[in-house]
Length: 319
Image (tube, rainbow, N blue to C red; front, side, top):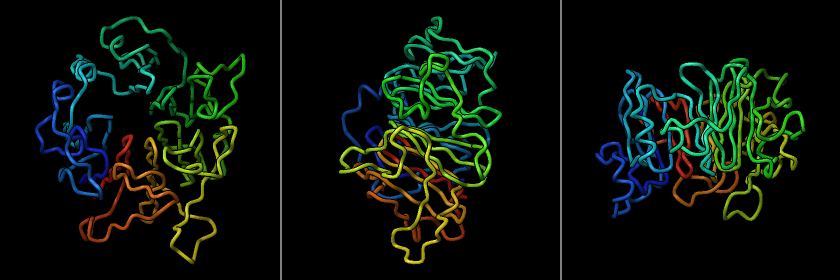
C-alpha cells in the first residue's frame, strides 16, 4: 500500500527520500522543513503499516523491511540496534516506558528508555497477564489489547479519565486492569485501539467507536468531543458528515481510528476519511468532524485501507 501523509514535518519525518534518518540529525538539524498542509504521497512502495514517533516515522514494508524518515533520538536508535529489539514497546510523554519481553511475553515497566536499553532491571513487572497483542502509550500512562480482546489501562492516578475506570485498592491506577465497560458490547469485542496525548479510542468488531479521556484540544474553546462521559467511562461516538443534510441516524461504520495529540482520524467502511480537532501543523482537523475530500489527491481506482496519526500528523494507507 502507498503511504500518504500531512502535518508536522520539522525533522523530515514525512520525507522518506530526504536521506536524514540518523540519530545525530536530531541534535544537529538547523533548517526546519515545511509542514505538509494536505495529504501527499510520501512513499510509493508496498507499505504494510506505519509507526509515527515525534521526530521520525517508520514505514513497515510487506517484505519485512523498515524504512525510516526523520531523526532518531539516540536511545531510540540504540533500542533498534538491540540483538532482539522488542516489537511491543511504548513510551509515555512523562518518559516512562512499557515493554513486552520478546522472549517471555511478560510486561515490564522502566523509568526511562535509557534504563531499558542499558538493560537495567525494570521498576515493575506484571506476570500472568493474558498475552498482549497491542501496546500504546498516552501522556501519563499506557493501554494494551489482549488476545482475548480485553483493553487494559494503567498510569498516573491523578488523571483517572484516561484510565477509563475508577481505581480501587484492589485495582490501583498503576496496575494493568481490564475496562469492564468495554466487555460484552452490542457490536462485538474490541479489535484495535489508538491513543495519544490524553485521548484514547477503541473499535469493535462491528465497527463502533468508543472514546474516553480528557479530550480538550489546545486552542479549542470547548471539548474536542463534547458528548464524552466526564468520569472517563468509554463513550460510543457517532460520526456524521456535518455537511450532509441526509444524515444516517446510526452514523458511520468505522473501520479504523488513529488518535493524535490534538486530533483524531477515522476511516469508514465506505472508504471515507473524517478528521476532528486541531490543524495547527496541517493534520487537517477543523473543530468538528469533517470529511476529508480526497478526490484528485488519491489516485483514481485506489482506496484508503487504513489510517495512522502522529502527535501532529495524519497518515493514510492506500491500496
